[in-house]
Image 1: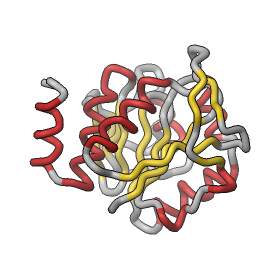
Image 2: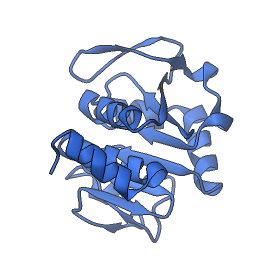
Image 3: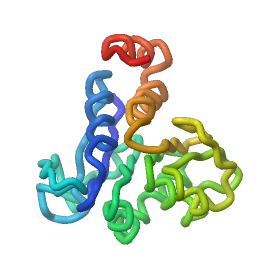
Length: 182
């Protein structure tokens, strides 16, 4: 079974994070919600507290097939400021493992040079941070081992793209139908 780590920092956008968790779990993927701190509860940008499966020090990165970064402010800045997480993002990218980010969070990949020569999308006004990317207005972009998406309104498309990577197009389309999407 494929395993995905979704990383939560104070100020994350809850719809972007939890939609991915929900869709991936419905598809049978194992997903862990990971706090980037040692706190097991993380507050969203809209003041919603969500309990985590693990804290950063408990995360087993060797078990993950993908790392996902939700957007939101100041969540995106808080994720990017976490050196341990950034080290793992770089390692996953270099090793050809999947990484994904939505909304403002693709800017992190741009700042790290990950998007050079790739198609990418993000929240409007953050495009200048997608350094070296071919920026699109698509709801989701899969370019190599990098998946990016634009924001809360594209969270279902983002989650389904992750499902498609690990479970195939047919399963993603079947899931979309069961949730009455599209």
